[in-house]
Length: 396
Image (cartoon, rainbow, N blue to C red; front, side, top):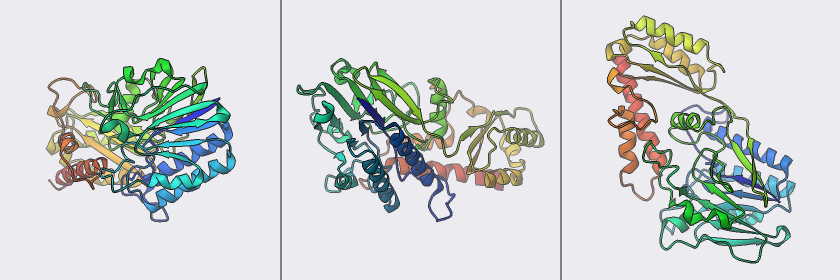
């Protein structure tokens, strides 16, 4: 049997201010397009079972376009693969903080999709001789945990869960990519008792055990995409892109199906500005931009400039920087003071955080009202600080 494992779609994710021709957020459209391309590939690969391991939407109250878009794409799968069961498991972003709120995922049961949103559910598919234990975030985050063990009666047994296994997402020796995930140990999962374990919550494709994987997300859908890019380099995944997993059972033979990115994250080679004049730094910025591959047009771009004083930053060619910002979907000129230099994502003891990082860390742990989405709250606060800092430098 061939199983398709997806997770962390985050449909409805919004970032930056650029709009589409129809007035929607461009990054939201990008994320939707990534899933549409994944559906194209699923229709071509024709798996016999499809599981989505949580965070289908970016918010528990997704926008109407996001709700409709998912309905359309699931309908495509239902028409093209009428015999293929589809299982959706609610993740942290799909789970309301109040039980009275409910979740939109139940809507898709009208298409014959299995949506598991609060309590764990064992789903049996006799034609496949397969049983799936679907465990949503809520079942692991509150109350007594369910036994993560298969039952007799099926030849193939699959566990689908949205959780943080052995703190791979929230490791203490580096800045976490996501928060709020239920902590589970590999021992609790008991991989030896399952034919395959499909995990969601970590946005990089990552192997936990011989037969247990995170599929990763289909696009960069966090408020810290550059951190995610750094972790890709750390895990030697640079260049492999985003995608989903195809799994042949019972051998648990996993193949990664890359999904072509709508646009690139372009992290330009950093500029060392120590001892340079503003004009010399301007020339190096222009050189980095001119040599960018791909070109910065319509891409998400960052350029870090190290060891530049406030006075030097104030004298930079801000008209040229604005021109770069108008070309790219997002152009982040990340100017670091000499005292701020550090090894990104290294977690080195005693390193100094930038102001945006300090704000992000504070907002991440601040108690929130039930109606607030933490990722949106943190992202908005961080962007305000970055914008204010940039405006102050330009005006100074």
